[in-house]
Image: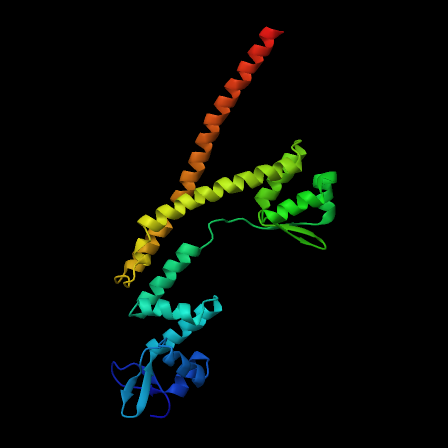
Length: 258
């Protein structure tokens, strides 16, 4: 057999070092470096010849994908060290993706300076712009601003159009952000303590546990949003009734004084 060894029967395709590197799109030097960092499984030895299989090629392709996603070699080594099989590593990667996946589905929106002047008029001040930047919602360019959320920008412009000063909207936004950060912290604590506590242990996860945790996270994510939404609307009901009762009381008192 020439280069690639295709054995008869059930034997899988095998590669020499140079052939594996070529198939993975890397150099032999990089391949050997991965071996030294224990990122790659040991090859099958036949005399002085090292033979690599499809599982080695799959591992190299996975390493390449993780590097493209921004993982470091150290982080990849930890993932691989946490599982004995490629399936275990894939499940850990899936768990990580489920944990760090974005919760919001907001789309950014760009407004040029003319649109901003139309929406905010003389309220488009340096102070209000600086406050928006400080809250992390906008980035400013020569041709206007980009807001991280079309929905928030639309709500802001509509509130201003209804007569609420932009500075007041921004102050309410800042205070709201503080409270929602606290709510998010509560959910993080619950999930970390009761769902992901196994990740904090020094021992590797049992086989299949990463996949089970991933399924749990995917089920809990929409529940967290449901709880937060229901709690907010119920709180609004309570506050509106209290404030309206207080308004009526003040009107009665003012009427009796008159």
